[in-house]
Every structure is written in structure tokens, then in C-alpha cells.
Image 1: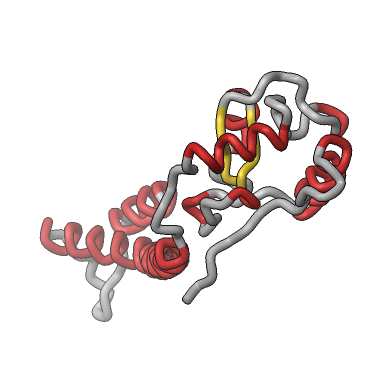
Image 2: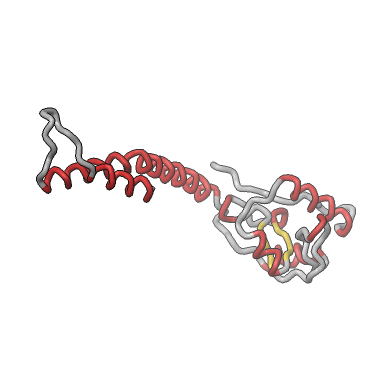
Length: 170
């Protein structure tokens, strides 16, 4: 955008012949030409920026409408989730294996800010490093399948291994 502004400023300062073949010499003509050049250079990127802002606002409004009214896990949910994980981080370390650090954080598999519910099914025990690394991103479907496959190794046969739950848009 700054390149467009610079180029329009340079082009507007160049002398241009009017209909009679006379070059404008007054300062008002130069400033008017500069102003018109800047407006012409800013119009298209400005419209794109306005459309992008509106699209982001609509997407954010949908996520806000989807958010669970409760953000923090209850003590009972935390106890159940940590017991299910055996006190160890459930996130993925290198080479798709389970992280070996102790779990200290309770994380939403689907982030709360993206409509993830505050339920035991969406609870993932995580170490501080894995929790920070994941952030508020929605994990890929492959990551979800690998976590469910790893859970089969440490969850009791009658326990639930599925992970992730989102609030409905309603």
C-alpha cells in the first residue's frame, strides 16, 4: 500500500498537459493532482480492507454466539480428566508419541474461544509447554484421531476415549 501511495505521489507531481496543451503551473493544480493520485491508489486496497474487516466481524460474531457460558472446568471435571490421563500430559510430542511431562494444565481440545465446550469430553490434560504451543488453534482431525488412539492405551476399557466437543451455533 505504501508503494502505491509513493507511486501516486510521484505520478501526480509529473507535469501533465491539459486539453489546451498548457501545463498547469499553480500550486493548487499540483496539490489537486497529488490528492487525486492518492485517492486513486488507496481506493482498491481500502475497499478490500473494509470487506475483510466485515468478514472477520461476522466470523467472530458466530464464534461468540457459539461460546459455552462457562469457561473454566470445575474441580470435578479437572479431577476426572487428570485421573483419566494418569497425571501425564496427553498432548503429542515429537514423532506422534505422547508427551512424557506431568500434566499441570487443563486444556480445551477445541478452544473455548472457537466454540469448544467446557466438558470432560473436551478436556485434555496438558503440560505447560504443550498448552502454550497449542494456543487457541483448532487441532487437525488427524491429531484428534491420534489422541483418541493413544487414549486407548491408558483409559480403562469401559472409559470414553473420544475427544473434542463443540457448542452448537443455536
